[in-house]
Length: 304
Ligand SMILES: Nc1ncnc2c1ncn2[C@@H]1O[C@H](COP(=O)(O)OP(=O)(O)OP(=O)(O)O)[C@@H](O)[C@H]1O
Ligand SMILES: Cc1ncsc1CCO
Ligand SMILES: [Mg+2]
Image (cartoon, rainbow, N blue to C red; front, side):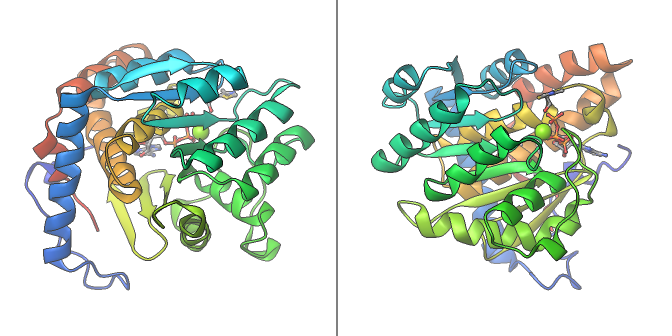
């Protein structure tokens, strides 16, 4: 991307026609919490455990390590539930399903609810297939702390949980989004408010990825521009963003975790685009940038 405005804080005043105007004092405090979350991950190397798809599992683990955390992947309920006691937060991604997941995933979600364990859901391909729909429906009674997905997935999940009417909904689109991020703004806000009602401390967030990402805690809506169109030309930019969101959730409240991870990815995508020559080297440079970006570079990024 050509805009280098992220290097100079801030676009705070640049939101005069945004109905969710963020006061600049609030935003300054929020930026400090984002920087602190990034510092805490680098200092404390928290474990975020994943139950994720087979396509991008390696990138998820490597991205969590590059952000400063640690990774552990598992597909067995007893293993996941035991490991959750030493994991700061978990990441569940429904991209590639096997028949036994239908029992395993709701069992894991119920165990997390019982202990108040924080987790991030990536509802990949929400709306497609009876098994995936059954699993995602079951999460309504034992919901995650953060949902991270593309616009189509957020709309599909909010619809299947009965939080928005099907008229507001769009068609499912496989693992790629067919909807613009802004089309999911209402669904995201409603979904975040629903998650917050279940969250042990009443805090939750939803992150919608796309050209301009959107993050909401159910009250405020933040728009985060930047990133690179090349992120859609490698597999797993979204999945690894979800994994890194869980890494930050291990040390920070949901809104701060979702913002920190999304800002980190936007900046890292820009750096990787400038340094790479195609999808192969883009992924390599993306990981290097996740490692090298400083707490200040991440926290001083544009937030509208
Ligand atoms: N056109 C774009 N311009 C800038 N950044 C983009 C663009 N499309 C996606 N991104 C970035 O790519 C990352 C992944 O978002 P995306 O919406 O592609 O996720 P996804 O569809 O869930 O991906 P996947 O399922 O392949 O992992 C986010 O950081 C997002 O900001
Ligand atoms: C390509 C693909 N297919 C199932 S999961 C996945 C990774 C992106 O979500
Ligand atoms: Mg995805």
